[in-house]
Amino acid sequence: MKLQIADLEFEPLIPYEQIQQRVAELAQHINTDFEGKTPIFVGILNGSFMFASDLVKEVTVPCEVTFTKLASYFGGLSQTRTIRDDFDLHVTIEGKDVILVEDIVDTGNTLKYLIEKLLVRNPASITVCSLLFKPDSVIHSIEELKYVAFQIPNVFVVGYGLDYQELGRNLRGIYKKID
Ligand SMILES: O=P(O)(O)OC[C@H]1O[C@H](OP(=O)(O)OP(=O)(O)O)[C@H](O)[C@@H]1O
Ligand code: HPA
Image (cartoon, rainbow, N blue to C red; front, side):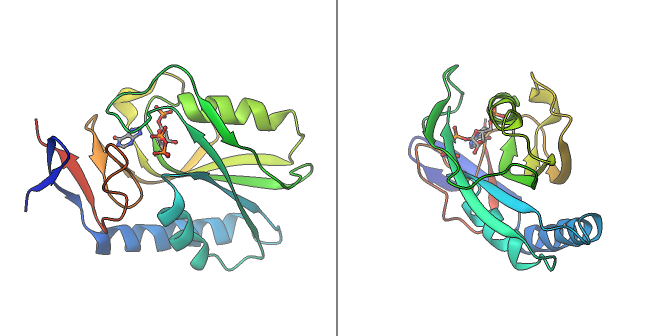
């Protein structure tokens, strides 16, 4: 089934049921790895809102949940160099095990910026959990990236939180741009 979003056409890549299955599996890994700890999940808005919500519902260790907001794509297909720091964390992370929740790691630029910013606040640890990862697009490799639901090729995707021109975030599945 093809989908028109603004001026582009998209086709299905990952169905909702498969996403739910992988999200539950990632949460199980986190439950095992963080047993005896109380991690703080930090969702990176806007894109991560759906993934973060589904992920923490499957987490059984005690945890905090908060958000920060960064943007560099401004609705388009490619990122701008400037990262707009829209809102910061409003809780302290000193001594805490931070799990950053991303919808996608593409060039790695957003996470590089955020991790450098957060490290000076002396967290006990920083780990990244991302729904999608494009290994062929990486410019800054992120050693903190430990949990990935799906590795995808270097194609532009929308759905399940991800947008094109701010549209498509509400789609249940993930769709890729047709060339
Ligand atoms: O690895 P990178 O190349 O930095 O790309 C990944 C980032 O780009 C997207 O954010 P975007 O700037 O589109 O903002 P949004 O989350 O509000 O859509 C996405 O949500 C990630 O945060
Ligand atoms: O493929 C993508 N789709 C939507 N937003 C993004 N931000 C980085 N990569 C992408």
